[in-house]
Image 1: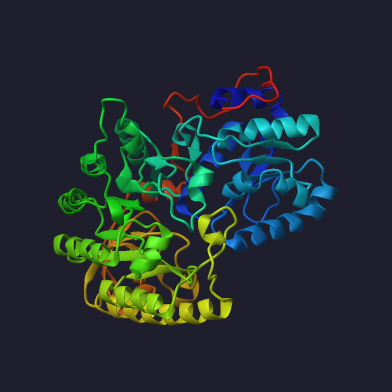
Image 2: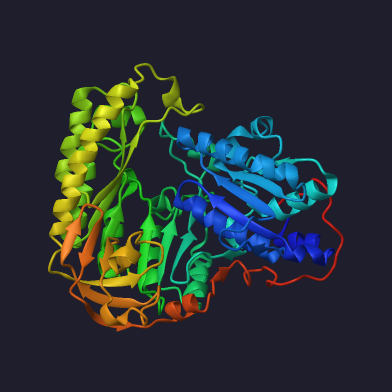
Length: 511
C-alpha cells in the first residue's frame, strides 16, 4: 500500500493519535536508516515517539540476521515483553527486518504474543498491519519476496539533526558464502541520481551538515540502470560523489560500503578532488588469505586489496582506512590466519570491525566441512584484536599535535560527564573527546569547532588544549530546538499531520 493509504487507515480514529511507539534496532547502518523510515511512517500515521524510559503502546523490533546472537537477543527481549503484553492487550509488538524475512512464521511459533511480522521489502506496510492486527485481534504476517517500492520514497524521521544516511541502492548481487544478506534483501536495485541528490538537498536545506551514502556495495552503483541496449555506467558512483560535492551547505560526505573487487581509480580521483568528501574509507577485507577469499567467493586477492589502499593513500595521504575482518571461516588454517595478520600489519587500518565466524543456516559456508572449533577461533580472534589495537593506538598517537575539525555529536562520549569533556567526529571519522573550557554552554551537537589533539587511545583522540574556533550552525540550532529532519514527504508523499477520515485499507493490501 502507499503511504497515503497508510495515513487514511488511521484517520478514522482520532483517539489513536495519542498512541506512542518505540523502534528498537539491531544490526547495520541499513537497519538504522530503515528504522528512521519506520518512525516516519508511524508519525505520519498519527503515532508519537514514546518518551525516554516510558513504556510505548507499540514496540517495533527491526532485526538483523547476520550474527547468531541476534536471534538470541531478539527472542530474549520478546520474552521480557510477554508479561506486559498479557497485562495490557492494547499494547502491540511488531517484528521486522532481516530476521523476520528469514524466519517468517517461526517468529510467531517462538513468540505467539507478537502482533505483526513484516519483511525487509514491505516496511511501508507496518501501520496498516498494526491496524489490521488491532481490529481483527489476530497476528498479521506479511513478507514480500521482492522490493515493490524503493524505501527512500517513504517518510523518514531522522535521528540526528546534523548527520544523515541516504540510501543509493538496496540489495546485493554478490554471492559471498558467509553472507545471508542477498537472500533477505534481494538483488541490487539502484536509485536514480536525481532522486539521491534531491534527498541530499532536502536534508541540507533542513540543516544537515554530513551525509553518508549507503549501499551493500556502493561502487557497483548503476548496475540496475542497464536496460537492453543501455549499458551499465561504470562511472556512476564517482559521478554521484562529484555531484554531491556541488551541493552548497553539504560539508561532509561519506559512503559505505564499497567492495574491493569493483573499487576503481575514478572513485579515488573523485574522493581526492571533491572537497566535502571526507578523508576516510571503509574497505571490507574479511580475510588476508587468498585461499580463504576464494572460499568466501570474494573476487579479489590480498595484493589487489593492498594496491587499492596504497593508491588511496597516495591520493589522500591522511585518509583513515577501516575494515571488516572475519576470524575462523571454515577451513581456515594457521597459515591462512597468519596471512590475515600480515595484511592487517601492512594495511595499518585506523580501526577494524572484527568478527568471529558465525554459522548461519541458509548460507553456503554453513555446509562447508572443517568448521573451526570455537576455542581455536577465540584464540585467533584475541591475537587479531591485540594486533589491531596496537596499530590503532600507533595511528592515533600520530595525530597528536594536529589541529582537527570536529562535528560535535551527542551520545558519543559515555564518560563525558565524569571527564568534563564533549565529543564529536573529526573529518576522517575518528572520535574526539575535547575540553570545551568556558564554551560548554555555547557548544551544541551539530556545531563545528577546531581543536588540537593532545592524547590518544586505540579508539579515540583526546583534545585538552582548548577550543581554537567554534562555529554555531543551523544543525546546532535544530538540535537545540528538538527538530528532526524529515524526508520522503514532498517526493510524491502526503504531508505529516492528522489526515482526513477515510475508509480503512482492505485486508491483504500491500505496497
